[in-house]
Length: 321
Image (cartoon, rainbow, N blue to C red; front, side, top):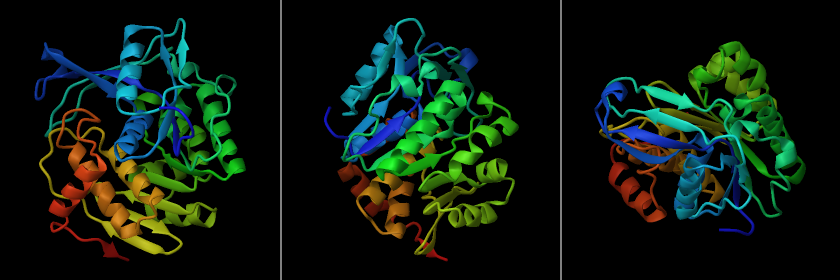
């Protein structure tokens, strides 16, 4: 795809090697391949839901990079501006898949092509007509240059009137809490929409989740979505506050649920769906993804989302607070 994107994302995409379901990573002998990365997951999710999406990133001049770009293109994501680094490798993620214990994850991303991204390497990132820029804290934490790029993209979006959604997506393997607070904490207040776990807000702001929401809203953030440990979510904006429990579904693999939720919510907001319906759609996309092994296999099309929501809607109802 090329032309004017409705949505732009920027971040790291890695080749995922996923062990056969239920087998510990150390004992696995068979692996499937896919693409993994917070922003690329959201990009694919939005593309399947019918939105035009451009992913800005960098991969290595290697088979892993070829595979990542091929999979993204196949999903209808515009990768026309992706940089191919001549020497740095594409990041690699190895993990296993299990529903009832912690997932073992091995990142091989040090010195990756994605970590070399910088403002100087991304030209005209937000074409006229772009409506939404979606970013996560992962990109800002990869390197000093990607931190500068993240800030540059946010500044550009604000100058051009493009909505900014931001998910801190804290990964402790990328840095200690103090560094996350220093690098990512200030970015929360620069977004129009923040999607964050209650624990992430507390770590990044030093406040409990409810107080952090008030502080962000008072500082100009238009909407804040808080994800709680029981998988419920609460959306607060100028019109009010809505809460939604998670849909009860069997879990095959919990990885990717947050990105799936973000894709569902952002799609709904782009279509100007009311907040209670937007939360229901987001919860449905997350429920579909956790029933599949990879981060992206369960991401639905618009028709699949509608059918799943109709099926799940009787299980729980939104609560207006």
